[in-house]
Length: 306
Image (tube, rainbow, N blue to C red; front, side, top):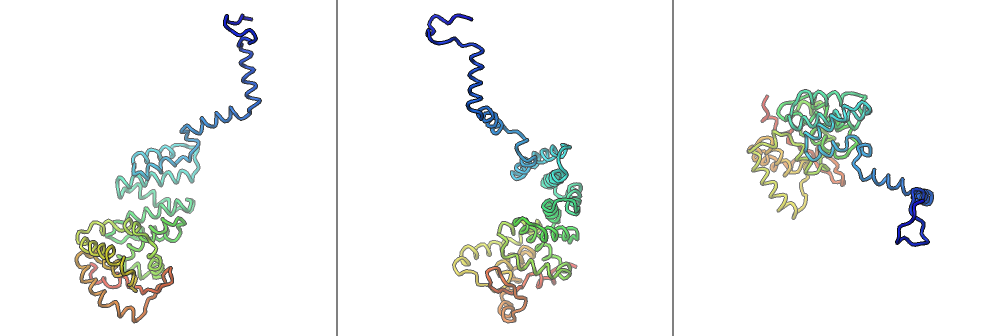
């Protein structure tokens, strides 16, 4: 055995390999959780993919509008053979959405969405989101039976509240511009009229077709309604007995017909008292109040092109 250093206390044994092993053995037996705890903390603090759902990062990138990175991450998940079919279907959905955000109308991406939402083997949540996105690909200018079917499926089957709102609002806009589809599905149209009062303003804005959003002729109506809602309606409260309200009716008319929305709104003001007096098409609102349906689509067909 080696002799201790000159200044080493006489009553202290020198440190040897055996003594070091004895100390670690005492720690291990006396505090059994210390080494597993260190290992757990090291793993918890490290960004290991195994500790998170495979598509979490891809969805985060998608929500941050980083379409290219989200697409690459979803493709990575698709290339892993060990993943379940349900996860692969989600990855296909996300990959298609990223492509459509960068290249609206991409045929391959739309075909993937169509295959996902029409397949009974696809999980319902994935089907509803795929159907909503497929329906939203409709450009707002020409009727599309495929878009109608997709939006109807999402609206009738969505379990997520926000997706239910968005699908319903998009379907409402579609049926507004397709009189034949409204006549063929009166129950669906009535359901949308009953639900529309709970759709938040952000949902209305997001769901509006691009053709309506971009109309320059809609700006005067938008400014007038914005002033009314911010300066007048907030003081006098909601008084309109019609559904949609006069301000929303004017907004819709301006978006759809531009400056012609002004005379259309004047016609609405003239008719309002008689519509309320006849009490046709009553709609019970969530708060119990009764309003009377008088949609723009019932009064502007003469302006529609054949």
